[in-house]
Image (tube, rainbow, N blue to C red; front, side, top):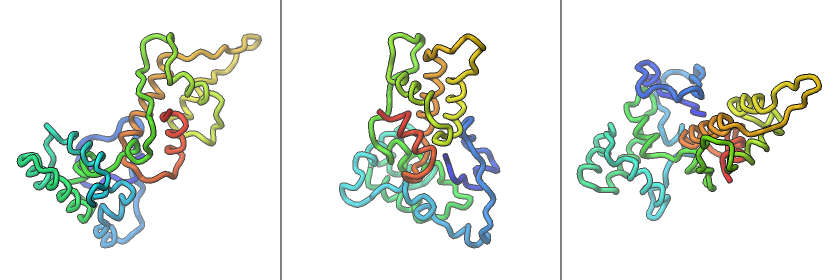
Length: 218
């Protein structure tokens, strides 16, 4: 989950919250002066792209491609598009890394064009199957849903705990439940995995990362 959203974004609502999975940041007890001094490269260390020669080259290319046809805010990102210069793209990201996160106009530039998301950071082969409109034939989500049904509640993120409960409806007396994957079950799991894959990478720890590894990656 996102651990921080700049104050300016919260106040203006720019870009909107990330759907049902968004959580507002907890108030900080740090002095205001300390918060203002916090830089992107400190707050989001795990998400930074390596700008050294050949460092994260595939990810830089991916972010560059994502930026095509878009309208970034940072002047040097705009310039990089105008001049079709990928080195300027890297330079712009380095400038953002060294800037303050407080009331920044560049948060979405950083998130979209200068940082790793969870799919980038965790790697692996994320399930690409759609949810389909029929339960047959089976697809790759079905095995994950079967596994999720029997998972321990303490091992699940909040969103997947909700799905786990739906997969285990209360049995009617004398009528044991027969488990069958439903299209809406696939969609709910796929939607969460897609959402989490696109969120900023904060490292390998946390219940959400554990859930993603178990139920989103082949």
